Length: 209
Ligand SMILES: Nc1nc2c(ncn2[C@@H]2O[C@H](COP(=O)(O)OP(=O)(O)OP(=O)(O)O)[C@@H](O)[C@H]2O)c(=O)[nH]1
Ligand SMILES: [Mg+2]
Image 1 (cartoon, rainbow, N blue to C red):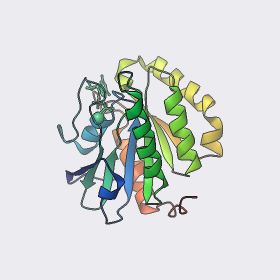
Image 2: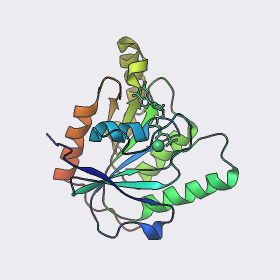
Image 3: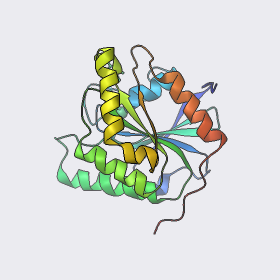
């Protein structure tokens, strides 16, 4: 089982020219503001305060790189969908994220986070379309699983499985996993999947068209 022995903040990136130059494998965390990206990273690393989390949506504005075990990166992407963000910033976000995915750098896995109590938003669906288009292997992670009774959570997973059946069978979606920072649900499973992806990494993506 993959063990997170060390996890350190490396850098925050607002411009792709600032990206780290060494090509280590990346594990990405993607999702709307407040969905729990930074909290999930902290839980995975068992290191409170590593990634800044807060109840103020839109806190993480940069692409934040964390180096894990001196071997691979966790990458916290800026959240989207925060209503108070001006249109100009939204356009900036789109460009940054799409250019980021186009780079052709080695992405071992992306975690697309969605609140377990909610349906995917149009921006979540757009994000998944991008992941499919750029052939990035990804997981749907249903966050804040502790906020749903177990039976409702199972039902929700089933609904998601049906909605994304084609992505699961013919696309790049590797699974749907519930997660909670409160009771630790999903942590071991995610570590196992990350370990598998790092052991047999997907072939490097073709250069962007
Ligand atoms: N109950 C519960 N609360 C959670 C869980 N994960 C995150 N939260 C809470 O949700 C809020 C937002 O979490 P963040 O990790 O800051 O969310 P984020 O996706 O990084 O947000 P941005 O940086 O704004 O994009 C915080 O108040 C967290 O404590 C969870 O599994 N269960
Ligand atoms: Mg954050």
